[in-house]
Amino acid sequence: MPPRRPYHALQHRDFRMLWGTNMLSITGSQMQTVAINLHVYLLTGSALALGMVGLSRVIPIVIFSLWGGVAADRFNRRWVMFCTQMVMTLVAVALAGLTWSRHDAVWGLFVLNALSAAATSFDNPARQALVPRLVPREDLPGTLALNLTAFHAATIGGPALAGLIISGSGFSFTHDVAAMAQNLAHSTRGLALIYAINAVSFLGVLASLVLMKTSGRVETVNGAAHPRLLESLFAGLRFVFKTPIMVWTMALDFLATFFYGATSLLPIVADRLLHVGPVGYGWLVAATGIGALIGSFYTSVFPMPRRQGRLFLWSIAACGVLTVVFGLSRHYWLTFAALAGIGLADLVSTVIRQTLRQLVTPDALRGRMTSVNMIFFMGGPQLGEFEAGLIAAAFSVTASIVSGGIATVVVVALIAAITPVVRKYDVAEWSADK
Image (cartoon, rainbow, N blue to C red; front, side, top):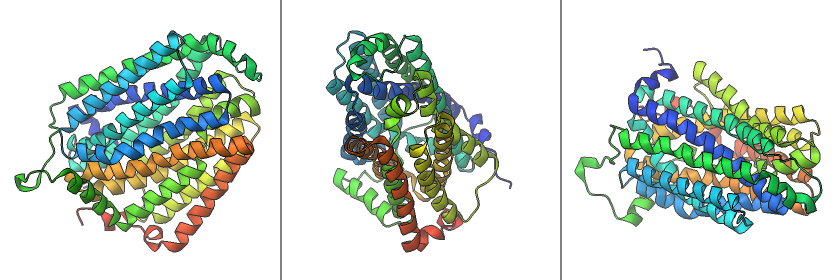
């Protein structure tokens, strides 16, 4: 039987409903990410403070993600998602209210950002564990491709819309840090509107979860009771760490994104290095999404090779090289192209990792597998933003970005040299159906 096209997954009502509303929600969340980074920059003018945005997200992820996986494999996944989506809605409402009323202290932004990340720690494992229930197994690769397409379309549309809204509020970058407060006053309405739009964007996901016909209950083996919490937690950890290909791909994902994760510095790059306004800044943030969207279209139409190890390593090495170009560039379109290239290369590695993990993991362990993976694929870039902010504050923005790109290439070379299981990775050998 020939492989089914990804769009066949949209024939299934519950997946189609969640896919469409989730794309709108991610668009709102991407708008909020742009707004928070710019908001912190306007309040402080500090590279270190921008790095703290990533730190405020990674700490809750490290603390709660493992327990989020346990919850996803123990409780009804639909209702776990419903609760987390409600928390993220309330966070967006609070951000809008505080910004509009001018009670927008930096510490308040960090606290709300951390609360949203804590909710994500429970939401993502439940979502990843629920999606394979919404379609037949033969359509699962299509759902993953469509989810990536939706995500990267949102990472384009969200930042671009945010830039237009902020520009329309009368904001413009200033090189005088003392004038930041006045500039913030001009942008208050735009920032508050972005937060409010994000709050509204969650309503569609909430409705789709209520209307969904697919059960979110967790399947147990022969009707057995759930193990105790700690037993459940350690069972997920044992499964992941006894699967070498998962361990090494997660480790490489973490280390690479830790070093080349410097997008939190884009407000400074746009302002001080490229001298562009909020619209230009918004499109720079969207550039990685544009590259990733192109890559997702390509991987949706043309099948990936069976032997994917070398492609996986080369794609991450490309992210490092392009990060060096991004750091050295002083031309807007070269910077844009480098960021788009990073997005495309990262998409290739993401498709390889996600397909492997979903196919090799039993349904009863999917939530916990995802929660362990979250520490790596979300912790890496968020900690990387903090690391980038520290180096930028101590040396320069250019030194921070370029050194991260070089370190990424070095890490890929080391792991390629010492781990044959990654170099020789063949997707067919790791299928759960073999």
